[in-house]
Length: 298
Image (cartoon, rainbow, N blue to C red):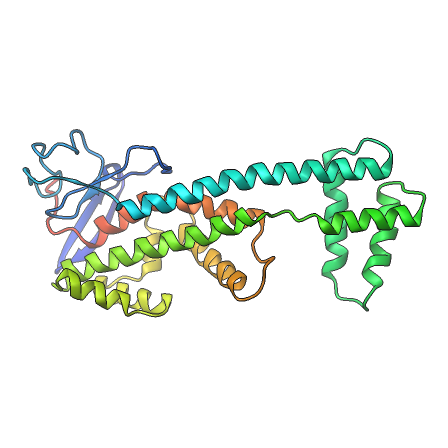
């Protein structure tokens, strides 16, 4: 059993990782429960029954809350839907590309062959040259790669490949919704931290967090209250590379919304979905790390 330690009020706290939701979370799975008395989050036998004591503070008689709130699960449900649609539409688009290549080549075209052609055309167009040179180079490359005799047919193939995009709109939706979900969970955590650690009332804490403009301001507030950086706290979580992937995803999302429509790739959306499915256990860990009002004796 692993433990994470954190200083709170001059006292070292020890967190039992087996009490946290550690497996990837998807909508429909059993959600963690939060004790309304001490803010502990986890799965324990009878956790949904008020008569079963909280393993952290021992409180009974209080109705337990599902963690996180309903709006977070709404976001999870939405991005799960868009992720599935993205997979289906990408497969359909790929099939159309292979069929189009087969029609122009007059023979069957294997998936690997189509991918190699697509990668080569993208590689050629990714290098800056004099205007128009890319088209000539791509046509020559397709003649050689796909054994095309006619230059005109090779140019038609290049046009077909350029019209194909590996991503669909739903990939961007997954990335944007995942960033929205993580920022919402962070804001909720900061509000609770301000209430339990700074003794602010809920309304004041919510206004404090709402007034923050940038992500860096949220990181500063987290460190000010907890005396540990957000990066260091997240890196203690069971989810591997969560922090670095989150930072990279935010940069890509920002590039996208500021005028770079092709910033988001299929792999970006896949990384985003993995972050989303791990977001609940990660933020349960962070809440137990920073917001518990009473330490478990065991």
